[in-house]
Length: 145
Image 1 (cartoon, rainbow, N blue to C red):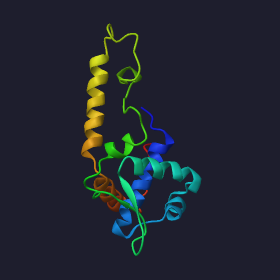
Image 2 (tube, rainbow, N blue to C red):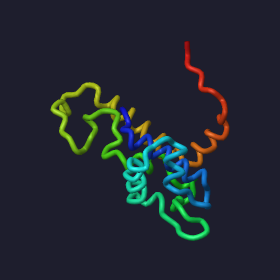
Image 3 (cartoon, rainbow, N blue to C red):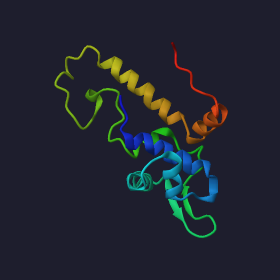
């Protein structure tokens, strides 16, 4: 499975908003911090707002804030704002018909793998990602030789 760029930027955006905690963060700040054009970020912000994950506040804490706590928002919630189907294989997409569905020998494997992936996304909160970021902040990712 490959996530589209809006999904990847959506995760980065929600993390920026969560890291700002309740003070609010402007779209321009997110764009600068994440190196995303403001125009492209418009689409991402809109999808997150439609999904009910973020809102705009005015006044002392102006900018974008989360509608729930970071602990209450799962990675599944965020990715669902951008993906029509979170499937490891197109044959599991309820919006398409697989011509081999009735005779597929590996469908059980794909269903099990998909279920594991969805459960992992549902059990991983934005707060988990923030904690992981803070734990690994400043540490370079090492790639295997």
